[in-house]
Image (cartoon, rainbow, N blue to C red; front, side, top):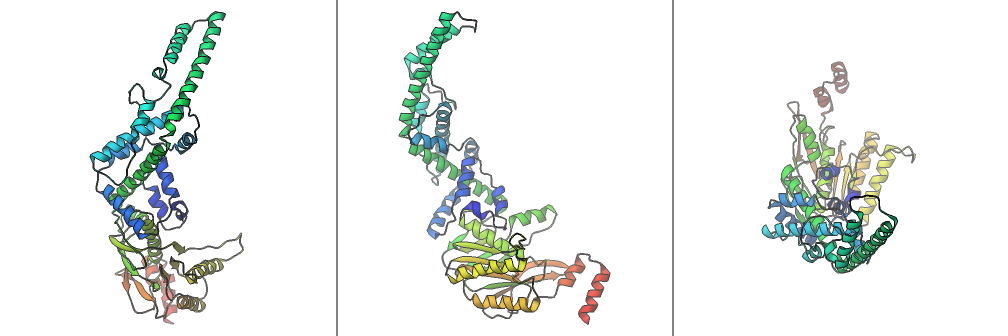
Length: 448
């Protein structure tokens, strides 16, 4: 799974991407094409580097990274032996200069998370006059013959007055000679630079990576994200887990986001509670934070331990498709069945299922959910299911949303032994200001 493909999962990951202050287009491209990390060793090494950047003031580096352009095509052409034009030579020179400046800052701050090659020879080749300015043209100092021809051209052109025929012919000859010499010099420069193509590619890649690390560290500080502890084939737990996009929306309305604690291992987990109890948000949080951890981001929790998986499956929402000719119930069953088949194959998957069979009648719906939990006795990555049905299965760990407390919804999760879903729908409807006559009639029907 690439990060770009993970953005299609409706869990808030796109919000995290959109709020990431990556300065360079090549940094953004690198992140989008990055693969999910499934090795503890790889992630531990990644987070050590991110932690080093987190502890440093990288403002000056970030400002310079804004100047980095994505010149992969130019460097590929250089590596293949193509003669570069003036614009491409400028791009190479500019990359070498900025890389050198950032390398100096890294050395000053004793940052070793990202290494940059020495490109001073590249700058020397493209800056024969040692001006150290981010521009390029075929300088006179590359060739005495070129310098002399340009003097002659300038002398003939004068102030731009009309020239006699013999001088026009001479000027045309000199201009052609100038173009031929410039081409020869570009060929020579491209050949010299060819030996540094690998270092230039490495510099661009490492600058892109540095850009990503600085952006992730900044996001962690801004949002209050944590460094995860990652384990293989162990328990996952979150203390103070939250969803940054939902939190921002609530705080903009003057409301407070209520973080939750949750832990699970191979045993299936059910979360029960009335509608509007935040169960779906919990599942989205779990999907989001699993992806954040395995793509090397800060995790939205006070602290956490994340068991690594190969895949995240979030079965949520209405997947009804008119084009495919299937109802929401059929689409839901097919999606969950796909997860079941993967679990049976032993795929290390975190499966998050939101209120399965909610669109059918309660009797069959309850039976379908209990049957699902009977089938899913153990999942290597984890299996968390929300439901509003009363589930009696004993082979599950149960959480319950605390629910209404003094007409205020408490979204805290608490471990429970009971599978009975709280009857709070009418109270919630009443707290929303629903028509009083409707509420009274509902209560009479319940009493009967």
